[in-house]
Image 1 (spheres, helix red, strand yellow):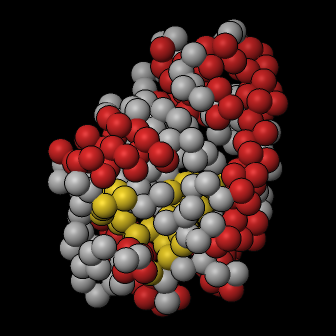
Image 2 (image 1 turned 135 degrees about the horizontal axis):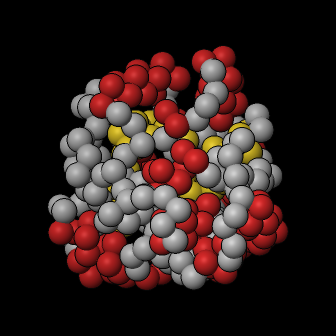
Image 3 (image 1 turned 60 degrees about the horizontal axis):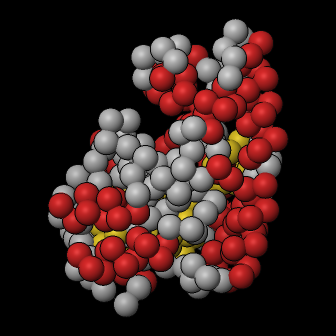
Length: 282
């Protein structure tokens, strides 16, 4: 596998198996068409698309890393940890992810009740119609329902007015612990990566604690170039990777052709002075 930081690697995206809208095969074709050489499908808390994604990638001549994005509760907030290069059939991570998914049904029902109180009926059934995997019903599926109903113009507007803290439809959820998520990834032979660190509403001291604890328990990388970061944040998180001794990852966080800020494989390359996370894989 290529070690060069300038290869077109996209190691963060989602299919219809979680909250994306394209099949694993369609994502592979889109990545290949956009010049991706190294690809990973990282569905939320779910490995059900991995066999299909790997087969499609190999058929197109791309290198592939099995992946997942695990929802974690840290300091009463949700953060995401990507696992790359995992054994997608490993019993430990499969069981851990199953437990993480189990709370989604009750959370979704409570979200629908809140939206009903806000004058929006049928939200649970409506959101479910947008979920390719009913076990992984999420805020994104509710957001698509609200757009479909004309409540908001697009999903960005939804997440300003609904489904977020202090707005109708917001229900907190206790996800996996950081320690458990990293342990599952390591046990499955993978590398743990903090996804889009620029998105979290934590102060500098809290982020420092996150980085240090993550490293102490065996986390090895952070996303530097991601669709969730601005160009100025590319530099910020490149410096953070250097400061803490993290490897650097790159991924679009692509979900949908119309919703996503960045298309698969179209991000800038990692800076040459950073060590890419894919340097660990052969």
